[in-house]
Image (cartoon, rainbow, N blue to C red; front, side, top):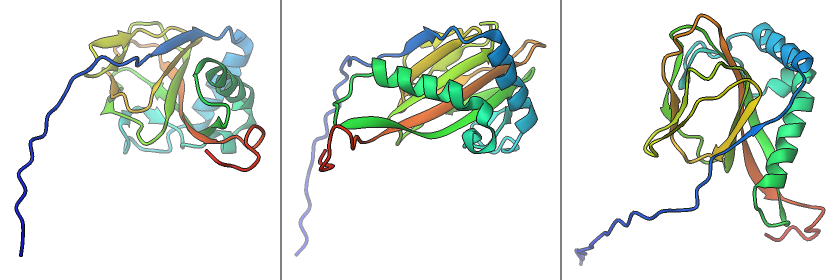
Length: 188
């Protein structure tokens, strides 16, 4: 015998405490310039086959160059210090890539699920090409040295970059993993 169920599905829109954070890191220009040069050196590995319709490196730039290690460690430490998580967990960097937006480059709307937290660090940006959070009626006009941190489930995009000067950033995703230091038996 087969039963037919009738269900009523209700959708409730709520305001949540979702936060998008921006931080000026204060990275010295000399080091930022080394990172910029490395992103150019690594070049385009994705051939615009991702959501990013710009020059994009692989997803694991730390495997290709040690130049980014200081920057990525600083970003990971900062996120760990400002994102409220239970001490039994810690952040692990899952992937990180560089992107160079030349004139007319853009990124289509997408999210970074199933990751926990995402970031974009702007090595070079005038603020004229925004990072748009689709569906939230919110955008950020990033400038040089700005770090943007946001929940990975937020859809975001970048409209066509209309400047002659390249817009260069490092983006990435972090997940939560058990913190073995504060959780010796590995129970969540």
